[in-house]
Length: 259
Image 1: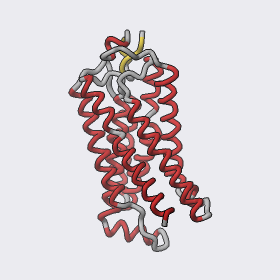
Image 2 (image 1 turned 60 degrees about the vertical axis):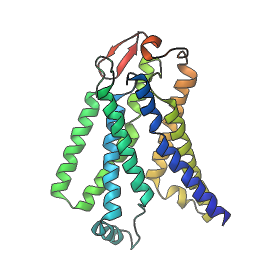
Image 3 (image 1 turned 90 degrees about the horizontal axis):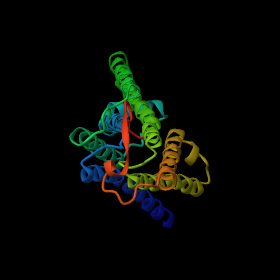
């Protein structure tokens, strides 16, 4: 019984940590009235990925047809999408859209926009999804959406890491969302280990390699961001905004670059 309560508390904690992690960046942008230092590519990947994830969860949660097809393909087992997954995807999509909207409402650096790589990824995968919608079943389309979400999750942090590196600064990028994401990812991975220990089977950890891989990838990027913020680029104190903190010039794809 204690093990079950511990597991539920752990799940609730990392669910809350992941959900709250979207707010610090929104608050930071609002206070600065600027998105300088924030990768537009990251925002595009985030919105696109969570849009796909929301459709995927909605389809599995509400569609009897898709659930029946899943059961036929998986020896009668039901899918694992629950209401908290549905809520999280809607919540994440909404806050990602709010953050993207801020990039249009607030100050940007000259040339700070989505890169050709992000635009190509979006249009190429959207065209692939459109073709799948016409040529294949709804079930196949829904699974393709999950693969797009997976791809977005794997690459979305790369532009921000590169932006921080080129500017030699993390100004404009909230470290608090990273700390919350790291806490959520660590607790999620801990939950897998606890489930494995409780059942005596490594299948709880290795049985879902996509979830495991995404979790470890997210944790790895979080560690990179924390290293950039607290070790490599620490000359950011005593300034009210990015203009007073940095001398910079425009970079064509990734915002501002320190002179």
